[in-house]
Length: 89
Image (cartoon, rainbow, N blue to C red):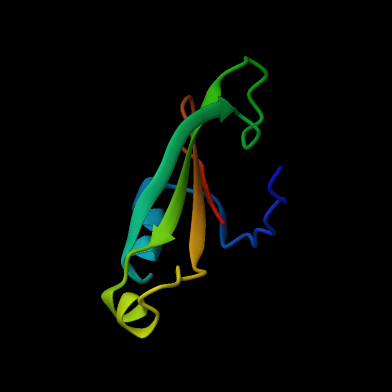
């Protein structure tokens, strides 16, 4: 079983517009995996899901510098389906 990855919180409880501005400042990335999991980021007691997206580097500079290795940059974006807050790791 793979080991758990350590995540650093970059933004917690932000709205979509602010997260979009923050993501534009990152290097080029692609969504490596997207799925739905039970929500853990809001205070709503009704069971619902969040959309979890795992981001991977797709930068051409990283690919040119390390053609046979994968860039270690990664990100995780969590979006609640009932409320507006987003978390970025």
